[in-house]
Length: 150
Image (cartoon, rainbow, N blue to C red; front, side, top):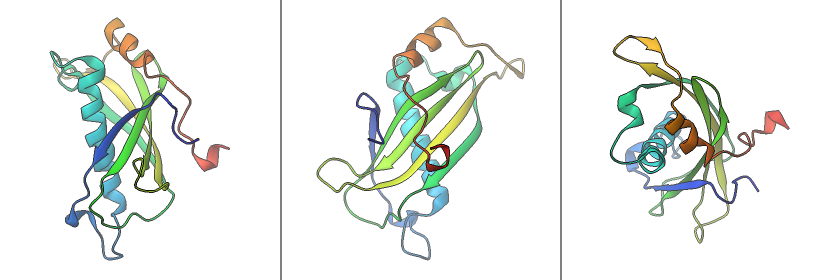
């Protein structure tokens, strides 16, 4: 299976403006879907009383493997995500953009993002706190199932 059983899920509504000239979701829009899912997940993973975004985090790398075109529809698309690697000052998140249960069985994209921890006040990288590591460890699973890695 592409998605670990205990991964976090966010359903995202498609917008008409997400379409490109080929009448499917534009490749750049997938990055927005990943970002939206990530922000929602962080609220739940790290707690609502504080924001990992306020503490400082930067996207260092994004990799997307497109699997199938996603055309506009009323049903949302699901982004499943999990932590795939934890380092001292960065971590990776893996994603699969796919159909929610009952809609279909398609996987539209597989992706992975490296996030670097950063202190905006000092404008320097920072180390991961124990709270951050504990929260991420709860969501740790295998790397994104990219075809090129098989």
